[in-house]
Image (cartoon, rainbow, N blue to C red; front, side, top):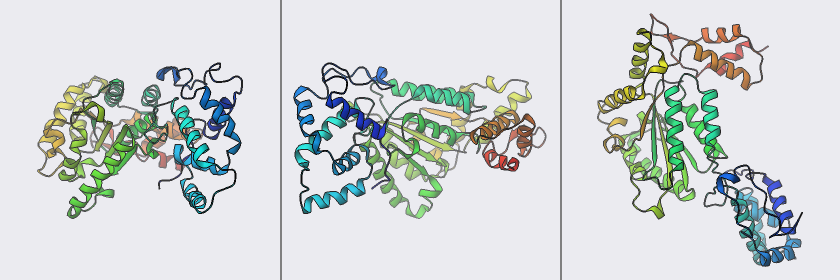
Amino acid sequence: MGPARLPGPGGLGCFVLVLLLLLGGSGSPGTTPPPRAPWADEQGAVPEGAPWGRVRYEAVKKHLGALSKHYWQYLACKVWQEGCEEEEKQQGEREAGPIPGWGFPLVGQDYLEILSAWYCSFGKCCETGDCRIINNITGLEAELNGQLHGQHLAKDVVLRAVQGFLQSPWPPKALVLSFHGWSGTGKNFVARMVATHLYRDGLRSDCVRVFVSLLHFPHHNYVDSYKAQLQRQISETLQRCRQALLIFDEAEKLHSNLLDAITPFMAQHTNKADQQRSIFLFLSNLGGNTINEVALDFWRAGRAREEIPLELLEQRLRLELQEAAENSYAHSQLLRENLIDFVVPFLPLEYQHVKLCARDAFLARGLPYTEAMLDQVAQMMVFVPKEEKLFSAQGCKSVPQRINYFLP
């Protein structure tokens, strides 16, 4: 049983609101339309009289007096997966002896069906009935523009790829993005942004799975066991959610057999009816030196980093990946079968980018700062190459910890 979560939009207030609507509140079904959620325009209006009609409305109104703590626990568990441990305990008590006035089969099932349908009319639901999927592309774009520094290529590719994929009514395959660059340049940061703006619970959503190579698959002697476990976990996630996000960190350290095991989940869809809309993100430090060499060449030529074209870096990266060692990330079926849709380069960060990261860190903690303080944080970092001292060796990875130096 997973950890309990708070209800979706509105939580308990949403539950009370629907009861008021069913009771007639400021009108009755058929005369007063249900309230529109902020994203209702994207979904279209809820059909008049659905999901409840006059007959069901009267039946629900008749039995509302039977609602109790027991019913709330049942509803919260089934719709929002909250408090399921307590519900299991109560279920055992109900089986042991009926609760006076409860009338569970008549009231509970009918209420659950109606309320679940009403709740899900405001957003895209997982099959559990919990509205986790929000696909807030506007929010993703705003955060990429405001919080991701020095990565014009990554911003553009990720936004266009995700938006285009979600807008496609029948995507032919899973969306597969491969992030490459030095540590601290923003690969995990962007993956977290994608999760946050596609799912209400972000990385905590049951529709999102994160695998870290050295943490989840540390021993190559157990590859076969890992392979079966990985396939089972991905299958369960895809069955649970019509839209899933799978993130693989330190992908270059994954054994090729593990990567080969997941290729069926990313391949072409053969049946539209069984299609799962899924996004795979692979995060790797592989190719970081190649990306840095291109950025350094542009700097030495007096050209702005924003002039670096995606085509140049993608071509160089694919060539490097293909020349990698036999059992590496590059020799998996991901590249052999052209399953990677976009190779996303993350450029090395310069002094001004580190200052912006420091500013964000101060703001995130509600701390005052000055330009001199931002310079001090940036000067604490190590910059390479030795002659130019142009790129931060750690990117922005340790910046939030460094501002502790300025705390009173």
